[in-house]
Length: 134
Length: 134
DNA sequence: CAGCATCCGGATGGATACTG
DNA sequence: CAGTATCCATCCGGATGCTG
Image (tube, each protein chain N blue to C red):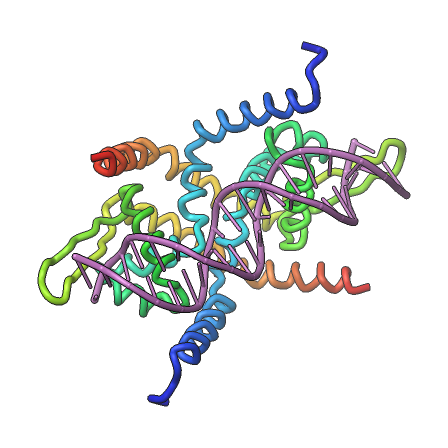
């Protein structure tokens, strides 16, 4: 197909890319942990189960919408379980599944890398920005 | 200040949250790898240096704007070096720094987790979505 | 208490055209 | 070849008000 238009070529590339992404577990998981709040929630749940309101308090700055959305997403991915205890008032507990705890392990690795290298990263940024200020 | 308004309380929480984020290396790094393309670029550079056009070809689906933006960001964070070789045509090579290679190591851990658990995640999603379809 | 529904501003990211 | 500049659609995420 030498006569493919630019648009057709892009579509083809896009399709190939989509297929790649669909079969790329790493990107799938990257999508999971790259959410703004997912990491914080998983880390907050590592010590043990937490109630909705406890999570809101522990993760300062999260809106209720985002917390709910994040928890639903984690629940869907099999990372947390949601347990409703009827009564007044209602009580809802969230807890990591074994899968969620393994994800927590990965996040700890990220955290370890972060703490070991943040100084170097910050320095690199400062140096880069200083050049830009010329 | 018992007479704080809801708005003031939120501002206070926001400030506390921002301060927390600013001093939280893990979130900083999470921000780095959570970019849509950063992971792919770092992984593509792991085997060795690559030219701009090579990266465009290897990472199917990336727009030139996003590739440039991602590379600039990685350069700023000290993860890659950018080497320009004058001439016609111009040649630009990107290469991981030691810091970038260490980040690559973390990404490999993510990848390993992903590949080991993707089946479970997919199954959990299917089960969750099946319930939603009721 | 633990949400859901709605609105809305800003950031994200793709398409396109042009340049040293 | 390796970008820069601009425009524009979409989505993310916060604010607000209401509910079982």
